[in-house]
Length: 199
Image 1 (tube, rainbow, N blue to C red):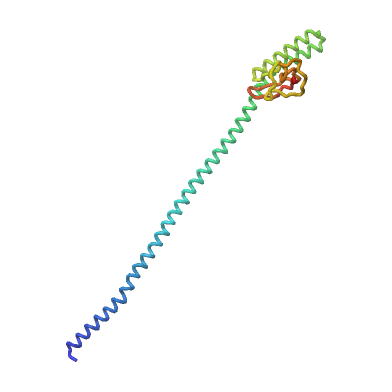
Image 2: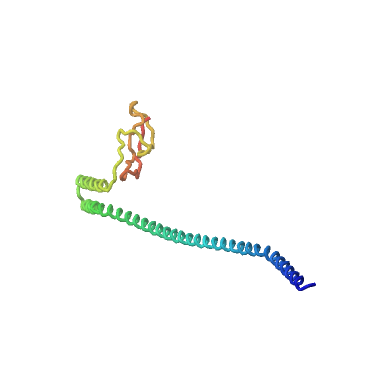
């Protein structure tokens, strides 16, 4: 075998070896590229999910803080309202009591005069004045007597305790007698009038 043939053969072997190497390496190379790509994609999805989770947790913490602040604010408002209402009731009661003190003074004076042997007519007049003064104080504080004389029976204001025969046809369903007067405080009925109704 000549040197040229040996050289040619060596070149062919080298080409075959190179081809085999490239054939064996080439299929592996794309797989490596795919593997790297596949490895990067899940990592980026995980990172993205982690970021979304962190954002969601931050939002939850913010909303929870906002909720706690509003709950505390509402609780403070409720306590303040209850306190103001109690103070209002207390001051209203105090106002009425202060207004009634002159009547109490008048009654004490009337009792003293009765004990001294004041005549009956003077006592009656004095008592009428006290009652009149007391009614005026109650009226000034919003108390109003419910009218019953000749009125139609109304369950919003009256309570029927008796049904009696009406003396005339037009008096049927009307109030014929008031057993106990009723009162309103402003627009609210605080005691219904007890009445006898014609039938």
